[in-house]
Amino acid sequence: MAKELALIGCGNMGSAIAKGIVGAGLIAPSDIVVADVMEAAQQRLAAELGCAGTCDNAAAVSGARIVLIAVKPQYLDDVVRGFAGSVADGALVVSIAAGVTLERLEGLLGSQRKIVRVMPNLPAMVLAGMSSLTPNANVSADEIAHVKELFESFGRAEIVPEHLIDAVIAASGSSPAYVCVFIEALADAAVAEGMARAQAYTFAEQAVLGTAKYLLETGMHPAQLKDMVSSPAGTTIEAVAALEAGGFRAAVIDAARAAAAKNRAM
Image (cartoon, rainbow, N blue to C red; front, side):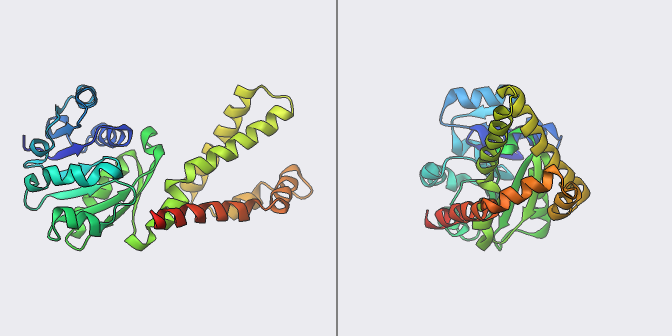
């Protein structure tokens, strides 16, 4: 069952990654095999992608050039031990398991293995993800560039050293939840002003989406955009002043650093 890519774990994130790669035409479905302990999960994804599927992880990784591990952290050790001996020499092993270090992966797979630790986030499921890529010393520049290309098929990706993973969690991995709290608050304000709830969410969600898109596409600093839309004695600067008075900026920093601290402690 030798393939270009073997996906181990057909949950939401693993499926989103595989769909992004296939959708971008980077790897043909005929060169992919997906595996999951749940037969229904692998069959569903295999049918959707038009690729091979199996419940046998060892068979899936045998001969694969890239092995993508997309299982929950608490199951990772047992899963990896089950197929470690079948990974081809020279294969790239990519793990998206949160909190699982390169050292731990090397302990399971062997220190000679080429391993990349990746931290994607939930927006990958709508092709708008942000992923950090952390290779071990065995991965070449060309190989990490290839992994970066794959992960950019469903969003953006940046190479970061492992000591910055906690910062990635703070700014990207956990941040969709903070953004949702912000959107809820914006919608609540609109509802308080008389707008219907569903419409309030539409306005708030599109405003957040459009603002992020504008910043990414123009390269403008967030402070510049804030200043640009804050007219003298206008509504926006009044709102910004209220946010500052309420400690909004400090609260966000504290929340993100709490997520980073929790990740360090896991």
